[in-house]
Length: 110
Image (tube, rainbow, N blue to C red; front, side, top):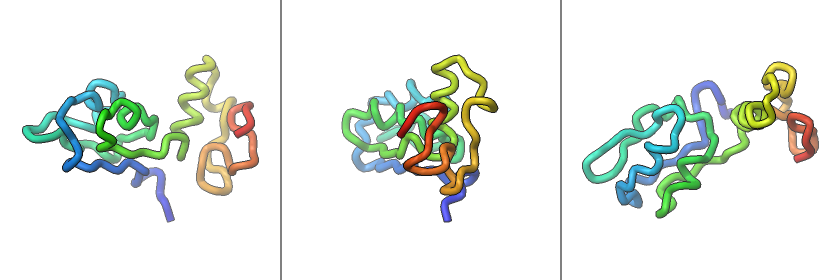
């Protein structure tokens, strides 16, 4: 079973990395660090699965399922200026923030 407190959907392929360091620049939690040949995955457990690193990687060296766990609910609440506690209930039946494919996430249909 996927444990969102200890695991993330982040996958890094160092052999594809061209060391552009965009992931370092956009990651809000310092998941990546500088390396000689390629960036290094230094704090994978800190990944909140926002997807910024994957979206900014020009060679698809990073994959992440944004919208899993509570990260998507936190991002949505922050963008809307809402309080996470009143906007989204974490720990749905499927372990995600929103509780399943057919449910409403933070006031929006998925």
